Image 1: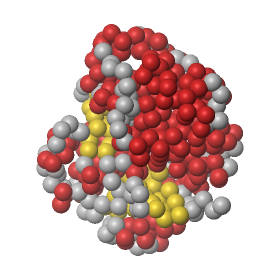
Image 2 (image 1 turned 180 degrees about the horizontal axis):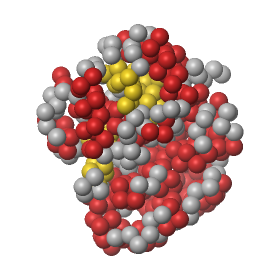
Image 3 (image 1 turned 60 degrees about the vertical axis):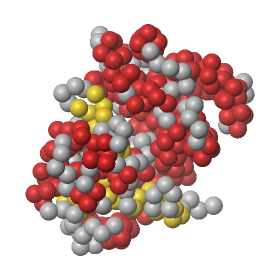
Length: 381
């Protein structure tokens, strides 16, 4: 079966190996004639980036690049990018990379014609209605990892550099106009990034599946997303050139981000402040926190994961699923604790305070309190 297709859900997606060649047409379809390609520093000089810039130039779109993007992008990056974008007179962005590059690019396109500060559009109540929709520029998204699924999301995660809190900036028009999912772009990912991003997709699916909110469509997508990660992440990790595994992981990433409209939970509530304060890799942090959170949520999710484990081909119901998670982490070289990731002498009270303010807490099946959240952090350390 050819792993290729044109999908209209949850966005206009051109999926398949080699489809980066359509970048020029994707920009024209989106009404972009002078794009700014936005990516992170690590991708700035890589072959896949240079090739995409070449394709842009061949299509008469120029080869403008902005890559001053931190692993956990902040408003400092937003301000720097907006100056380049506005001064250059660009009319759209090509969001290129992993979660950090995609999130920063989407925020630049969103903020291009706004007059208010970015924090005025945090995902609280109807704050998104403060934005001038005519000031939002079009986005073509090109993921080069298989994790966050930001390419099919209507929000970005931006870190406040003053308070070290991760904030979600949301607007329906932040959903990219066209997404090019080309698994060939992920072939060069190093093993630790393959593991961390893949487990980010897995965490999205696990938390969406665990969320108590009613959303059967997301529940089904989360379940199949977990299966794809189980079957194909070990293959992609073992052989980065396995294009079937890379394609299925790219699908799983988009599925995770689609599924978590049902909600996230304690895994993300813990990992967001850790990442903001200690600049750890988001997906790897999720993976470290997952075993403790699964055990914490066990009373509420045990029965739900029995049939899920059977669907995934795992014996032992919920306990078998937890054992699988431990074994998967070990096989992918994931640290056992946050301390191994460099989180030493943390201010746990501040982390707890930030975790409880994180919007992910609302999707956890067991209510998070100061006491049990502190205990969770201590287990992960």
